[in-house]
Length: 130
Image (cartoon, rainbow, N blue to C red):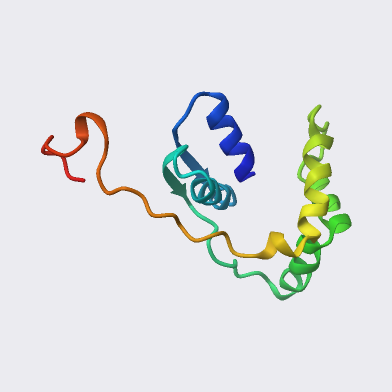
């Protein structure tokens, strides 16, 4: 998802501020870390940043579902109980091998350092804070 965000920003001529809600806050953070010149900032609304408190049965099932391409696909399909979007298969297919990859479970790369001053009218000498 982070790559999709970056591609959209570049397609629209970015840079941009990325807004993420719940699970998508992770994608916003990854996009910002991977393309700091394209992402001016991030807004995280109700971030899903720590493991939720699940009842014991859900806790037992969560890891196998998230790491199994077959179980993940079954769960993902359940998110669309009615008619699936026309491009549904295009989103499901790439996620299957990704969820089984050990690389998918590594933490995101460290934040890059950014300049502390802003260019343009809010830059040095404008009286605005850096």
